[in-house]
Image (cartoon, rainbow, N blue to C red; front, side):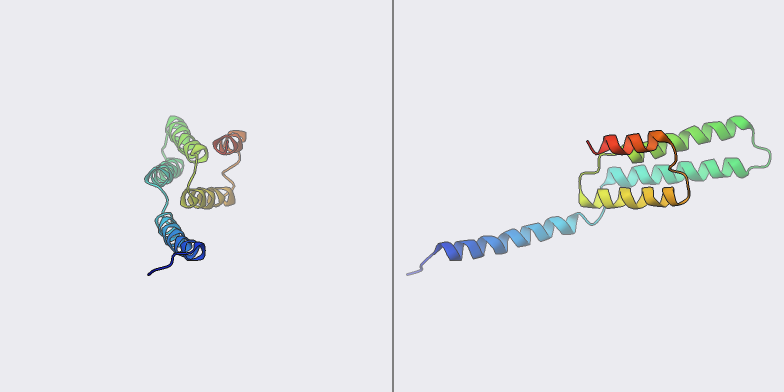
Length: 118
């Protein structure tokens, strides 16, 4: 005859809960497809902007258009509502890199980041 006590049930539940939580954490090590896509889009827009600036015969309109595209892509990263731990880490890490270059300097950046947290 098997005796099931509350203690045995609690221990078994804790083991199952720990295993399920471990699986969830393992899945969250990589940022979501949406977060990765936004970061990649900003990196591409930034590279295009830098090429336009370095172009010796570039017209001012080329710079302005690529600047607007880069700014829009950066605001999309700032505004992404990161819910998972992996997305929060990816967003924070990326924005800290941008800030270290001195390029997270507009009031809209901070307002967008803060609004994304609400």
